[in-house]
Image (cartoon, rainbow, N blue to C red):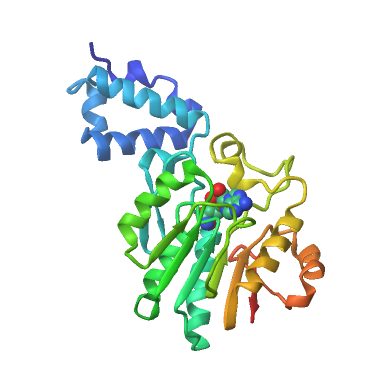
Length: 275
Ligand SMILES: C[S@@+](CC[C@H](N)C(=O)[O-])C[C@H]1O[C@@H](n2cnc3c(N)ncnc32)[C@H](O)[C@@H]1O
């Protein structure tokens, strides 16, 4: 059985221009089909193609993230594998990676060890480690959630080497026998019930990566306090945060003298602490 484009996608352009564009793109790039050939009836879709494309459209119509379909996302010049269960790396987080590398170089910090807390796909730790490659002796990635670790393990294979250690534990309970020169974290920092979370994010991305219960400031503060004890002298800690959390964190973390930075959209997005 086969169908024509008009059978299959009669309503698509009305539904969403974005969806229609994606459909054309996937026909060309994934199935090597010229949409014009399909429209004119010169080519017809096979049943298998129809099933795949239908699944794509239904899921995308339900705000299923494009990145999960593609299975990858670019982050700081590297391709990271992502599947459902892991947070899709964000542009803001990439800014933290880039900023950290620049800061380390500008200030001539010697980074031999890195800890990435809540590693998810591993995008932060693995990408920064790649740039600081020569001086680096160890990269520790901590991720307690099994679904996230499916993507993380693949990314460690692709971008890591024997210097990478994966800790399967929560940061609260993990025990470390060594300190670090650089600690990076994009913690879960959204309050449960926050209505600004986009529909697709809420429906399809892992809640343990997004939500920090009712009190995100408390979680961030506890992580910073523990992380600070794990930081060597002349070392750096960089955390991502929610754009409305600056005032509360400034008070809560006063003793550590955090410096706050904005992302390229002009929103308070991360802070760093020097030891
Ligand atoms: C906001 S995501 C960040 C993922 C990745 N670092 C990134 O920037 O895309 C937070 C990550 O922290 C992990 N996480 C949640 N609770 C944690 C805990 N108690 N200890 C360590 N990691 C935790 C989640 O599974 C998730 O992968």
